[in-house]
Length: 274
Image (spheres, one colour):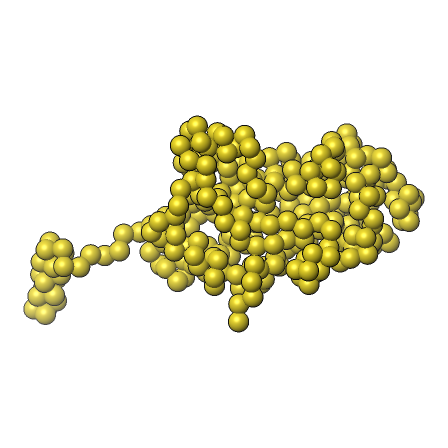
C-alpha cells in the first residue's frame, strides 16, 4: 500500500511539473467517395491498431458530399474518385482561403457489372455508351437474350457517376430510363437480384457478379496497371491545407505501408510494397 501511494504521489508531481504527459487523443474525419469506403475503412482500422491514441471516423455519401464537408470544416480528409471540379475549387478558395491539397492514393479499373447468368460478358465501349444513353435497350442487340436491359447508375453526387458520364458517355446525358442506386453495395445487390441488370462501380466491389470485359479486355490488376483496360481512373485524398501532425503521419502511412491494403482490398497500388 505504501508503495502504491508513493507511486501515485510521484506521478502527480511529475504531471504537475510537466515532466511527462499522456498523449492526448487525436481524431481524424474522412468523408466522401462511396467507391473508397471499403478502402478507407481498412486504412482506418489498421492505423488505429498502430496508433491507439488516434480515432479515425470514415463516412461515405459521395465525392461531392465529401468536398462540401471538407470546405465546411466537417471533415479533415475528402475521399474522392475524381479530381475537384472548377466550381469546387472556387468555393474552397472563397470560404477557406485555399485551393486544397491533392494526394493520389490508388488506381481503379471502373467495372461494368452484369448478372453471372448473362451470356453477354464482353461489350464494346461504344455499345456501353449506347446502353447507358438509352439507345440500346435490349440484350439481344449486343448478342444476349431477348430481354430488356435494366440500367443502374449512381446518383449525381457520386464521383463515379460524374466520371462515367464524362469519360464513357463523353459528357452526354444518361438515358431517362436509368434507375439511380444510392451506393455501390446496393447497386451490386440489385444486379445480383436482376438477371437483366447492368451497372458500374469500383473493381473492389461485386465479387458475386460478373465484371465484363470491355473491348475484349478484363478489368484485372495487370490490365489496369498497363492501361490496356479502357476505363481507368485514380482515387484521391484532398485536404484544405498542407497536413501537419497526426494527419500528415496518417497520409504518409497511406502512401507507403497503406499501399499494401490498396491491393488487399482489390484496387491497384501506386507502387508495389515488398
